[in-house]
Image (cartoon, rainbow, N blue to C red):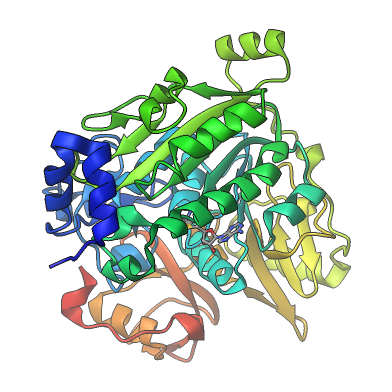
Length: 474
Ligand code: SAM
């Protein structure tokens, strides 16, 4: 049984009045698990297995209630991502479009970034930034598994990003660090840190981050601010602070799906514009708590009005905007790459590839100058060179480009268990020639192997290897 702090109970009795008991009761109910299908993957094999899971009302196409194991093949191939229903609402409000430049400023572990990138269909640029290096590494792994190719994973503070990319983005999501009251059900340990002063400290930090966030947007760009807390200090009151201190910021309406409520002007300065913000309550929906606001950064009144009637999307996909690599590929490296792609019958434009150290990347559109940016992942890593041999990257195997590679082998259950464990796979009879093989499961790339003398040497990354049992696969 979850024990809420007395001061929290007193506060919400006053704020929620006759709804307070329903709200408190919701903490004693189990948190609702949910997941999201990844449209960058081949989903046809999964529709039958997952067909009975209920649809999330604000993400009817891809959002489902239910549990997906981190050891299932759906997870390992990146076809699904476990994510609360309420968090999926944020991605819907961001509504990433192909060709946009989007920043997810506080992105780890990557739930919202992977949803945004999927809706961009790998076109345009997503910068998924995380201040904490350890968390940024997890974010980078999740981006990789999801087969995302248009994303830079960066590790900067908001101030450092602003120094490097002022006015650069069409959209910025700040999924702010907060007091996490909306996650108490899932993570009761978080209750220990709660006190009224903590709400105020979080609000001060959110305002500090916003001071650097707003200038990262171009004129006419959109800011999406979200928290997973109920605290008005961190929600409506932060938005009132934005409206008072940044006159060019105006609230935009958010479509309120089934159960989603308006924000509460009476919990802040009474500005009725705050009705445009959205609150997800656990006693009103099948979801954890969340708050979302959407604001446009108007240059001046005239520009603001014209933006309201025209989409804010920049549809230019000018490849000239790509920054060339500072290190060019050498002749022998180009030959190794073209041999790899020709053998696999993949037609790819090698002139767009960039090299950092020994690693080759396909950079995303609009890629800024990377010299001064702390990067963990720069678009799609194609592979690396070692002693005059080209090794395809794990990211390539999981991407839509790698998926076209031949030869390929669809793993059965036993082979899957052996492969993710890091074991050699023995093949009784095959037409395979010595060389790389793409290993697949349910029509999605899972990793690389190298065939020679009747067996496939395992190239599944050591850090991802795991023991799974047959019952866990699906
Ligand atoms: N958007 C993520 C997702 O959907 O998976 C969750 C983000 S979590 C709510 C907030 C993130 O803010 C954390 O990863 C945390 O490391 C980061 N953070 C903490 N302090 C920060 C600061 N001062 N500036 C920017 N980010 C910060």
